Image (cartoon, rainbow, N blue to C red; front, side, top):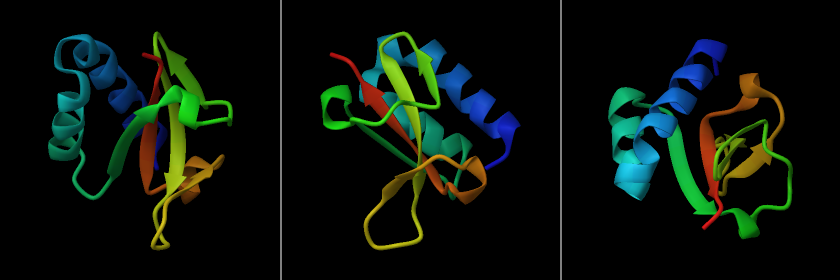
Length: 86
């Protein structure tokens, strides 16, 4: 995943999450087709995010297998998981 895409995702989430909540996922999927976006409670994720913005931690996910898994390398990522502190 390219760095500019990661930056755009973070910006879109920052601008829309408070007003739309999980509805922001629809915006992300429309803007970035082919990239998987998921949101979970931050308490479900023990790994450190690659980026934190307010209540949301950003994690890269590998989407090549049936189940997604967290990865550290953005080049291996097929998506982004948003870990949201409620």
